Image (tube, rainbow, N blue to C red):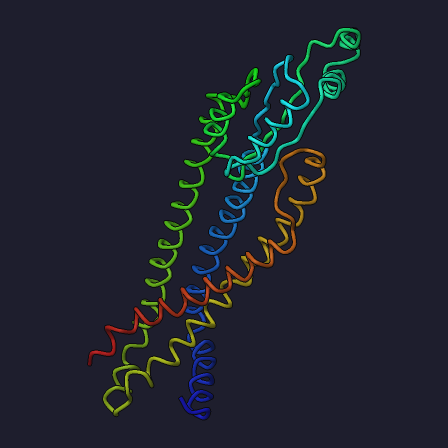
Length: 294
């Protein structure tokens, strides 16, 4: 496309926004409402995924070492566990450290066990993929000098299933919402273009090519997407800023956290802008197709 032709299409698209103000306002409003829903739901879903990942990553296997195990036995166990491909990290915690943690959590009443400590030395094992935890625990249980390998059997599997279902449901809902948005916006743009069908027919009759007619309308779709995404970006950004300000300090020190305001909200803003432009282009391109058959 020549620069002069491009400037002409750009100028015509901007003029058209002014000439068809109310119809453009209706289309932009449809984009705004839909993108606002998409933006809010996407922010919620991504933070739910972050919390789910934090919960998964907190899952660990506590390997209780047999009281008869020597230092050499413990070293051999450490090496065996470390050689399991799915293992990410392994940390040793002596029974004295275990007792100190117990006193910290349960209170000073447990200090009486300092004279005769009944606890085990422990290896704390984390897997690269949290869903491999049950499989790795079974492997560890078969090793020599392992009293038990505790990871919350039964509850952990249920937790992973719930998190998997929630992620899949969230993904389906976002995709469904996007398709609904495209359908609604396409229909709104169709009404806009229908009101200008005579103008398109005249241009066709005087010899204008399909792309000569299509380009200004596609550019209108781009403007429509940009205008329709401004308000959702502002609302989602400001809303998440204050939500993060309230929620993040309350989770300080906890093993779960929500996503940081930056760069997350800028990524969401860019995504909403791209979706808005794409929907505007797609809606214009699909809607004008039938009116080019004169």
